[in-house]
Length: 198
Image (cartoon, rainbow, N blue to C red; front, side, top):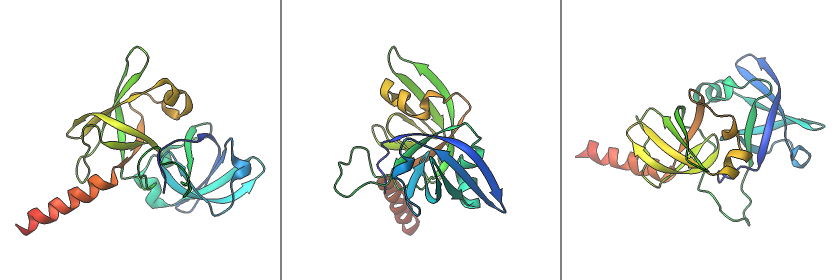
């Protein structure tokens, strides 16, 4: 379980493919605090630490993860938003984030707003929705929807978020990982089931 509050930026230092799996080695500010078998969200994707070597650690992404997220597009040198699993006695600053990406969206607009930035994303609305002032996770960052349309939404980014996440390198055309609000997903599924029974 995560909250979408990014702890730090990691950097990809090596990528190795083995069969349908991809091993990704990164460095990050808190590598020395990690342990093997620990869950860590990478751009919102929950991956397990499988090895630690000095100031680097390695995670493995399977075919399913590579197909449903932007993890397979990572290259050496890329910045990655990182968040460790929520601690039971900590404050819940973001929203409920599972680390299970629903789909990949695309940044279609970026506009500076005199001190903040508005990013607009396009996505496949089949099976997923956003609501005005609802929660959305973009590359693992918990954000508030400010413009909810069918297959499109916008979020506003403050300077702190831009400086401390990989939003500082995000540009129009980039693919992003999207995890939609879990409550909204359950409500949508229940409503669809009720309509089918009617």
